[in-house]
Image (tube, rainbow, N blue to C red):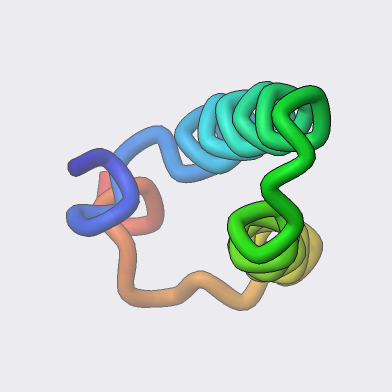
Length: 64
């Protein structure tokens, strides 16, 4: 929800990345490679969003 409204965007992305890395680790232990690939794509998209956070002009963080 924090990402959708743009409030505390940096911390929401960091928390989402930690959650994704935990899920990826669990799926690697279970050797479910299709889900690992899907989760890594999500983790990569979170990284790209975090890397380009300075261009986030329409968020609630910028307005406050």
